[in-house]
Image 1 (cartoon, one colour):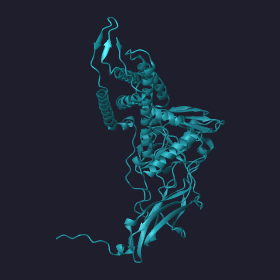
Image 2 (tube, one colour):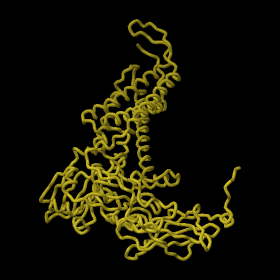
Image 3 (tube, one colour):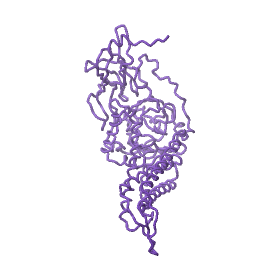
Image 4 (tube, helix red, strand yellow):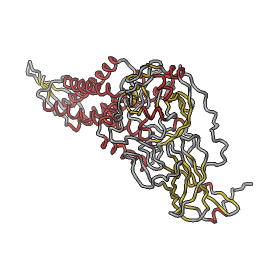
Length: 564
């Protein structure tokens, strides 16, 4: 039979592409949560981010952080991770729209009126095969068997392609009021399909599938279970809330960030949209290369073979801006790197360790540094709990005085090699050494907590100062570019953590700018030069402006209403 055709435009194909790609993504998300199958949108983002040139990647990071700060979207690392995932979804949707538009264009050029689904199936299978190769390179969370992953991806993309082809066929024949029987030549009247009603039905079905799939996936993903992978591991006692400096009389100014970061608030920056899923019962630390005793250690071996060490540590990100939130403090527990070296016995030709994480992040650490600094440790716990998945479970390294970019997480292998080489971020033109720069921050000008004493009123001002392992010896505050005045310092949790400072400023009416600067343990003043994060970390003076209330308002505060 020959039908009368009115071929749909590529713009209509783009619309259909969006309608079909959204429910496909929702179904992939549901399969990801229920069966550990690949979620291709996040894999697309991870592949792009890991293969973009360093300068372009840095430009994207800076732009994203600018937007987060400008729109006040919350803590930088959490907001950035959400933004990354949204970009993955948007990229997938865009690719689906473009691919469907191109399919409609190709079908419009084809001859004849056949209602075959073969072109769409070919496009879908081709896209599925290509994206499966991408997923195999970057996916860190799929737990289903390899053959099942391949079958699933090919099936869902073939279904998407066939659906797009079917919708095209229906639209192309939507205005056919007659058709001709090729055998008899007889013209037969048929009922025309209303395109608008058809598109509304497609859109409604798309919405139902998208909401249902995404909703069920979100419910399944929110259920407890992340800890199931570590349920057989020894867990430390929960912290009692008593910190080493609990008796220090200096109390932080109201509004200063917590001295000890709540675990779920600890910043995290990594190279993937989602952290790797690692089964503690299958994980091994593979130690190879120039060692006399190559070993394969289970997580339980790490608890049994090495003496436990604990340290309070502040960790900061090299991409943290002056006054930013990519810096946190918690208690680390694990074992000494020197004791680890004693076990594996590096050979004379060994010069460095190549440490690789399950996320394929790698970094090199000089063997001389590991031998010289007894504070270097491998950590399996934070806050007396096994590392959370998002924080590097099951193992990460801590190197004092280095930014986080030099300290791999999710460690799966350590290879002893004869020379240092560039690690993941160094290859992307970030700092070779990544030594922490001294910095200080005004967290709070507590205008809501103005205090009265015998001489009048004082305004508590406070914040943090940090210099890696170099410690802090002094912090000074300047008001409206005036003389620098020394602040009080609270005893730090350890020599490896930030210091909280406080300055009680004598109240005055008006608007004021409060600046802060710090000196490290050797008396060296932090850099006052305003410098961006790339490649060696940001430097400069942080400030905060505030307007003081009228003195009359302080002397005559409003009285609470008394009701009889």
